[in-house]
Every structure is written in C-alpha cells, then in structure tokens.
Length: 316
Image 1 (cartoon, rainbow, N blue to C red):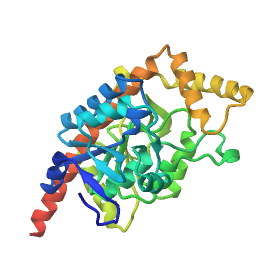
Image 2 (image 1 turned 90 degrees about the vertical axis):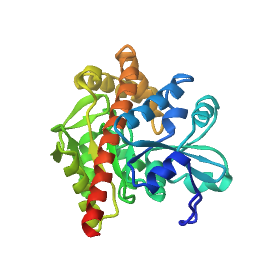
Image 3 (image 1 turned 60 degrees about the horizontal axis):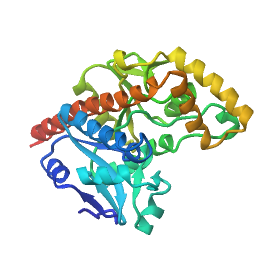
C-alpha cells in the first residue's frame, strides 16, 4: 500500500514487484468490465486485454475503486466479481473523492484511470478510445472530462483515437490549444476507434518505439504536467469503414433530435445505432481495438522503461 498523497493506493503483488524492479506496467480502466459487454463476455474481454498487455511485454494493472482505496491491479476473482455484480458505478475523475469517501466500489473511466495511474507511479495507460468534443458542442458545451484530465495528469495515453460519434476535428483543436502532444504510432492519420482514420491527419507520426519514449520524457522534462497522447489504429482486418460509420451516425443524430434524446443519453443512443447499422460488426471491432491498443501500449511501455534504465545508467 502507498498513501504518500493521502489517498490509499493498494497494489497487487505482481504490479508492486514490477514497479519496484523498474519493469514496464500498463494501467487499464475497469469501466470496460462493468459498462461494456454483458456478462460473461465482459470478464472474458477484460482478461483478453490484460493478455494483450503481456503479449507486448508489460504487466497489466487494471484499476478500480474499493473500500475507500484505489486498487492497482485486479485479481481474476476481482474481475469476475466486477463483471457479474450489477450496479457498480462508473467513476470519472470528478467522482473519485466522493466514491472514495463513501467506501463503495467503483469502475474507473479514462479520466479517473489517468489520475490513479499517476498516483500509482505508472506512466503508461491504454484505452480503446478517449472521449472528446461532442458534435454540437458549440451549443451544448459537451466536452469529455477525459480531455480536461489530460491537461492535468502526467501519463502517456495509448489509444485508437476517439469515436466517430464525436467531433474529431474539434477534439484535435482542443488538444492543440491545451498543448497536449498527439503522436500517431506507425500511421499518418488520427484514428477513430474501430475506424482506421477519422479523415484528419495526426500532428506527428513516429514509427520508432524508442523515439516515442524519448518524446514522452522530453515533454515532461520541458515542465509540462500534462498527458502525452499516442494513437494506434486497429488492424485492417478488424476495422470498419469510416464512411459507413459516419453515414449511420448522421442518420442517428437526426433521429435523436427528432426523439428528443440529448445529454448523457446521446452517446449510448448513437453507439447502439452504429451497432445496428453494421449488423453487430462494431461490437466485435470494439473488442479487437481494445486488445490491439493494449498490445501496442505494452511494447511502448517496455521501450519507455528501457529508456529510463539507459538514462539512469548514463547518470550513474
């Protein structure tokens, strides 16, 4: 257990030993267990994501909240319990203090996971897709807390961009305004979750894992206390055509407006519409992108830990 920040942080033995030995660790969110697929597919997917991190050479650390503590690493029994127990709340960064004070369980989102990862001393986090600026945000001010948290947490975030249901152009504009680096790993474009491209070029492309490790450390050495975003597209065989998804979204947005669907309900409404329009292919692609991001995050975390070890060796 660590509580130097005043917040109890409890590690599994595997994660604690890996961090102590300077091995690569990748933080993962638990929201995909409680608010993703139905049981038992959610538990199986969580294990596949952890296996993908291991395939990349790193140790997975799925994060959750329980008994007033941030738990860093979940056992197989923990995953099974979170997957099968209904009613576990989704906990974003704004909710963390309340849920910790209440002592109840909670599943972490991207925003709360990067908070926890930084507290736990884990520099890399993986998610399938981040939140962003919503379509129509000029009127609604609907901007994901993920983007806000990236301006505050020193964590490298590996993802497949953001979902097509968002305004991805404005999302990139926001990240630029907030000086959050966005680097595409072995790709020219900013991906859109299970679509390989959003139609927007990434600000930077880096193909070398050691170069990414150096860039991450340089960002923080320059005095920045923000995240470093690394995108990696889903494999071609698992991807869905972006034009097909965009057509489904535009039709669903019109229907949502007609039916009076707005606010937090709109995301689930649009995602279900896309799933229906693709005959369920988007759900399978969702699982594929979770695993591909996790595997890439494992490899990048290994390169980063090697860079830190090399730097420490030169300084000795």
